[in-house]
Image 1 (cartoon, rainbow, N blue to C red):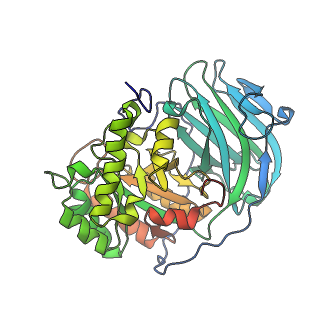
Image 2: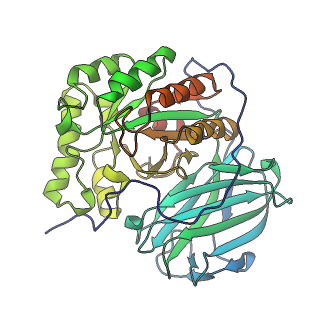
Length: 409
């Protein structure tokens, strides 16, 4: 069969990788912002490391090797290889990251999912900001960028005086490796932003999520599986139109929620193109420009196919993936998992503290599913978001507010 992808898993949960505890700090609630604003930011500080000279890096565990073939930029990239323990490298820097996010090019070579963990550390080792991102095994073999925001913090780090950067690959399986290149800073937005997304367009998006959020005039995005519209337990067209009138958007989540890594070209066209056409024909043109990958999975072929029809692609969701800085690769935008409400609230805190974009993903409400939350939990989150000093936005606003001007846009 002529396929556009490879094999995958149907599980959207976090990869089974080892973890380290970090203390996420909060912020006192304050009045939310209601007026639309134009994002302004400090100019990016630029390149941190092009990995042309690996002698700058101290290899704590694993191996670090130059790779001359297929570098992302320049004459070589660096391969971080697992030889037993999870590989760790670090180097001294003199970096003011107070108004910056990080962007890193990666090329995974593993049979299992991995986590790229980047830490910005002060001279006092206990003060650090964690920027971690889950990377699915399906992305092995091609370059893409991780636009990284804060996912955790320990102590009281001073980002205007970062003295060390540490990079670690967690998980990935025995013998796994990841190539890295072009580590650079990009500017932070003017403030923190939070996009609330509901996957699969369950009826509870309307009966629970919409009813709760409209108390605070908070918009959100439903990712629509178009063939399910009107089915028992899913949104109806009339409900979707009412939500749109209140500021919600309807993004594409494919026609049937098929695993597109195993799809033929004809199947992919039906799932991707037909779903977008249905949304446009029914009045949801704005949201239709955005595609939420079924199961959060994509490979290079699928990414290239989706890019022909959509402005942005949103991938795997995880508690490690919530934060983004400015977007340099619009087809591989990561999302956070909102089902653990205290963690979801901490994502809001981090958006405020570090001027990040947090895309927080929910599924059903009060259905009892593995990804679901209760009405009380979601109401608690909505009240917290309303009181926080962040700006709620929809997915289409991500491009306008978070695009990093580059060849991708």
